[in-house]
Image 1: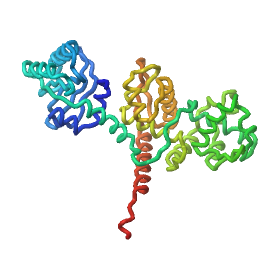
Image 2: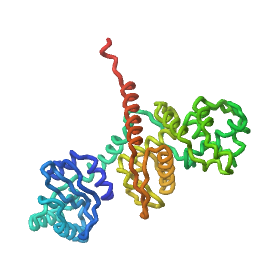
Image 3: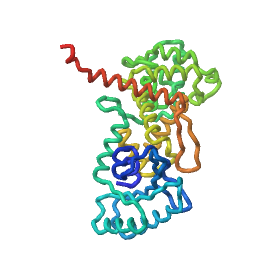
Image 4: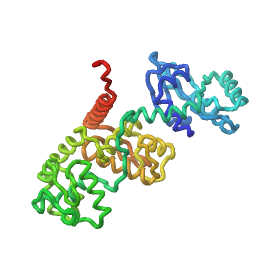
Length: 362
């Protein structure tokens, strides 16, 4: 198990990490902090204002790893974030007995705290943590799925024929005339079905009340361009989509679930990384795979995350901080926090209804 995954798991399991460190911390001061003396894995603070600078390692089963670890933590003595700072090596108990003794001796000689954790237990904690943070225990929610739809505004292309033909139901020929093939059309159709704009019976497509409201608020510029999908959503369309998104209807609505899972992704990762290219760091791919319960390749995961990001930007749920590195950063807007809370409350209510016991009525 890679060190970065171990670190993510430990920091998301405060009780276990405190027990391993013998340090009951109140907050994380920082993580992956670059200094002139090396990159610090993380720093914790307790309620007395004491800081603990942690050098995290997996198994220290080679002389090179031991030397690197010892040099790093000695260099950290040059870094102090408070008047009461201690330094610690946190390593896996699966390290060989001889090297464990060397680590213990080094700690005694250099006033370094030596602490350990179980790598095997952390592997189990990782799976449990992903499950816990996904908030779907006991609920049969649709699995996220990657469709080749980059923006919600692409609804314009599949819904405009209803406006042009002044009809509330269209045949397959009428609704698909602007598409290059059936696969392309089916992706747009899935978006329109998931966002409750149309219903389908046989080869006839019916406009819903939501669909009627959407086309009544089409951007006027849509009639002055050959690229219908490039026209932004109007404010009225955004409000309508937010209403649909939070109406509690999840059954088979994959694009709704994609947005829900993406907001959870931003929350769980603190919005610290949105891959801009592929391949990206393997540990980040594994975290995303675990959260979304998919086995996507680097390319597919990068596309999926960026397209979901586009949806959330269009709706005003996130702010994207552009970067010249391999990753952009994301923050939830106040609206995004509110919508995310609505999602969580709605799912919690559904789970409560499902698990409701009627024994007290007997």
